[in-house]
Image (tube, rainbow, N blue to C red; front, side):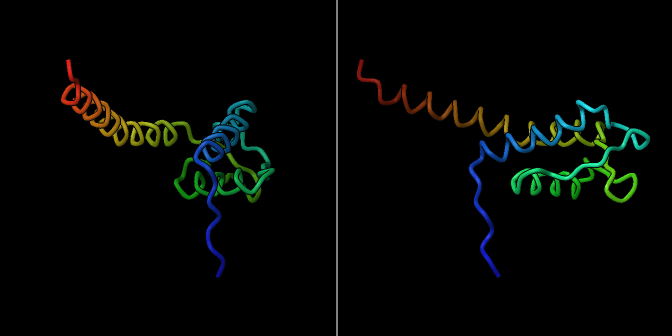
Length: 104
């Protein structure tokens, strides 16, 4: 079994954006608007598969997919709820350490 491919976070984020943008640009946001889609790169393929596993990209017919906006919004909100408190905690910790180390 081969080791999983490690892709830089920026490349993963860009691939996720490209996949979502493709569906939005073609207005494939309802089952009746489903489009054929084959990810052009391995990174985009992994992100496409992850979005499909999460139910954000859904199959209307074999090979035809659409983007479920309500599930996308819910996923973005879950990510926000997870990262905003952690980011605030890191910022406050950095400020606290800076204040303690100030030799004024």
